[in-house]
Length: 100
Image (cartoon, rainbow, N blue to C red; front, side, top):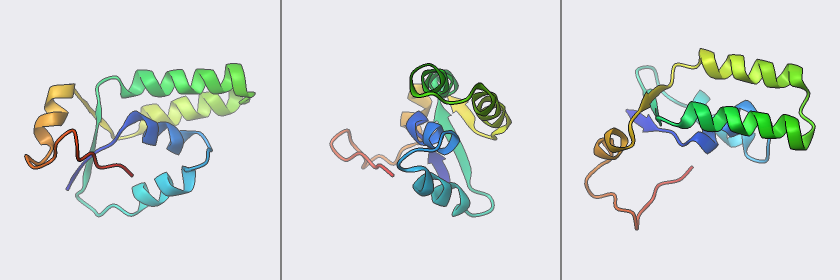
């Protein structure tokens, strides 16, 4: 199965927050052969979230560097927005979003 993962889910996985346990359970619960894709700006968005955590929430720089390394080591495939939209089932509409 292909999962299109929003940047907010990836960021929550990298930085401990309210829903980190949910994201960890999601990524651990996938089956062998499942694949992930993210919108093309995901890496930039996650980098910005990590920077904000250091700048405004007191995240130690050492943890931020590790989070960036973890982000670079993920096997997430970035896709252009239209490619992600085409991957969604036809019956999904903007009125029927699917969220974690």
